[in-house]
Length: 437
Image 1 (cartoon, one colour):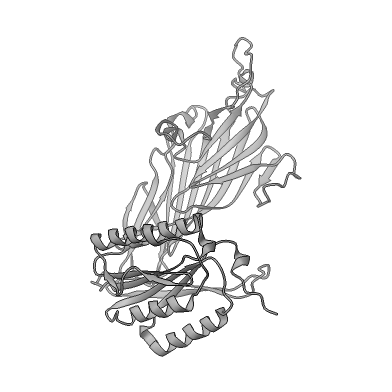
Image 2 (cartoon, rainbow, N blue to C red):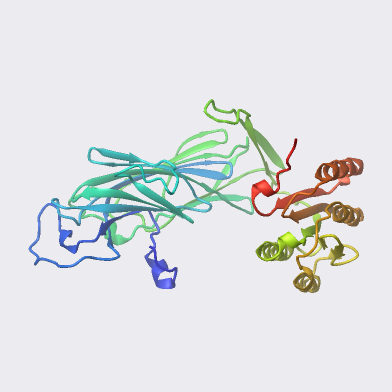
């Protein structure tokens, strides 16, 4: 798991929740109940070997609401490969779906129980702890010194994003167990359980589009549905769990959810979420007119300016034909890619990238007001497009309050045709915070 992501190593990464015995001493490997005869094994394994553990039961609960799925997994493994007189660490690995974010984990081994909490990396005050590591799409934790033959019961909770495409919501959870985690059928009865609830958030009909596992509808109340799959199986699932649905709506629809603050929260304000579905009708896609305003003062030299150049280049590649763009650089002087808004096409994008390579040179001071005025003047001609300004800078200026007031007045005077200004600050936060006496 800790080696490079080459093709062979990627094939060994788990595609379902897995538990491994972390074996440093090969002499500890044996069946816990009926020891087999084997000669003494010398030596140590460095790095330790990971032996996949057999799984006794699995329970998956998925709660889909709006664009997010809250997932709770409960599983039981047993340390079938270590003799009862010996101990070893057990590593639990849980792959997650799109934009997975771990919420917590609890593990029980005999009379011992563990649960996760967030600590500083340098915090070494707790002994006999369960250590967890979060990697992209994968959560790993290690349970210390588990006795051979013991059961490991783990409950892991995480959230992940639903994929939305062409009116269809899809949840996809890694659930492909390898054949070697199946215990002997005569020893253990394998019970697989999947619970799914859907809360679309819309008072519209929910249409089922497909599922990877056989689910029975248990209840349907308005925009809330619940499903269940429960069965004794010969082998654990060998395919990911997927479920797709759509919300029927012939027209644009939306809603708002309000979440009151909780007493333990340092921020006592309520939160809200607004969501909109486009519906099945044809929709006009608005054209965009974008001006990138980039700070090229001396403090931007090196990696900051290089990162900005890469970001602008990526943003340009996301524009489509029918959109407009321009690039303005500023220090004590102002330079523009073009004297007007350019139509997006392959030639214009290539020319813009060449221009950035030649003109993104960090030197001089910082004058923000002039380029902002220039950007707003350029966008005043964008009558049939949504005007946007992206300002990228690494520091504050003396007249920032005057700049903000001037820009605010300018936007108010333009009314509904005023551009949207998004500011991106580079560097440490303290560099961008003004000091007030």
